[in-house]
Length: 140
Image 1 (cartoon, rainbow, N blue to C red):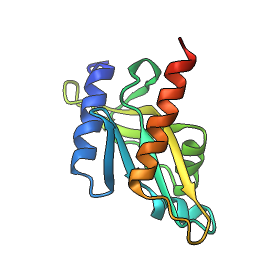
Image 2 (image 1 turned 90 degrees about the vertical axis):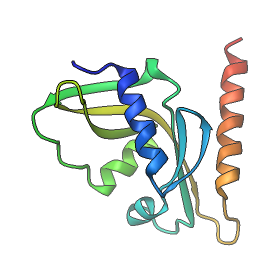
Image 3 (image 1 turned 180 degrees about the vertical axis):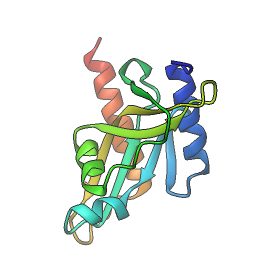
Image 4 (image 1 turned 135 degrees about the horizontal axis):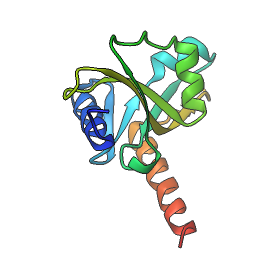
């Protein structure tokens, strides 16, 4: 493999810095992305949905490949199912070898289905920060 996991994480971070659906950051490696349109294609009654992608956990990032050509994108059903399993699958091109890879990041999906009780981007950030703090405390 021509790229390291940190190279892939850096590429993911750069992509989400430019992505208009990125609504915030937990830390410099962990974007919060509005994925409402994708989730609403698969689940009914979705008001809002946010995905937290953990680039801050390199030990949990998986890499599959290489592929000479970019693999086809997953359909929305597979994408949302992966999110529900805590995984964000991204196709990334390694600049050093010119090959494509599936890079799997740990992720958390937050869905609000209740009418009138919208989850805001700042609420999603707070939920993710709270979850991270609980996990850190439980490891002490």
